[in-house]
Amino acid sequence: MPRLRRALTCGRLPLVVLIVVVAGCSSSAPVAGCSSSASVKGSPHASTPRTYVVYTLAESGQATTCNEISHGKPVDIDWDSASASFFVATYNDGTIYRGKLDDPNVPVYIRGTLGQVAEGISVARSLLYMAGGFSGQIRVYDLASKTLVGRFETGSGGRLTDLAVTGTGDVWVTDGARPVLWHLSPQQIAAGSGTPTALEVRPEITFTSDSYNLNGIVAVTDRRLLVVNEGDGSLYRIELDHYALGGRVITKVGGATVRQGEGMLLDGHRLVVADSRGLSMLNLSDDASHASDFTTMRDPAFDAALSVARAGNRFLVINSATQIAEPYIVLSVPQA
Image (cartoon, rainbow, N blue to C red):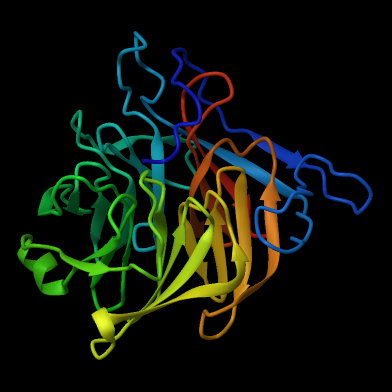
């Protein structure tokens, strides 16, 4: 699961919309919003002035005792242009929120069940796909009816962290504990059942004994994926090739290290990575083999940033910790 950097605390905050204008960066001394320590290898450009908008997740601060779940921590977000909505998954019970850009309050959309873990979500083809963390499940929901239309089991011992849906409808899921990518075909998605196929990623990608290995994933094309190793920050390009040994060719992306890299967004040739302290942004070469031109967004408003989505000319960022108490929030920031 995402790194639990703070213990949950009881208490509630008022539901408000906040507009915070952050001072721009200068070359003389660091100020709020700037970072002089590189989370990305190289020298990131200074952050630009920006305005934040805050969306509050409903019911995320309504526990009456510290033992209650209150839907747990938000872990992933995705934008659905068809419905002009963003969707947020929470860890402990898999509850899904649905938000609108003109409403500061984000209500529950699909209520989860205690133990129905969620870590990654993706919205595509009128479906919501969910990576189920330590449960080992991949779940698929119909967005309109909110019904579960597919459940796929990868077995015990894994930690399904994130997923990507290609233009052909293939689903690829990262596993933070087992050295594989899980694959679901469009036919399996249509049937709502079947056994996911495991694609081995060793020895090119080293796995450690903990569960902080592969995390974020994006589909560059139908046959090319990018993944990030949360532990050491390495980025890898995975070419899907039936004729290659093991059905894939894996190479390390040159010029880039994004430590604590988790959720990722592909924005044209720009890769945007949520890295706990905010966002790291880097430009990719045409073949996604090399990264350059680094930019970071750093500010105290980011509190354990785990995931990012794009809505128009703004980024939506999950804040999965709080400085004082619940509720949890989503930050909207202009693109850098």
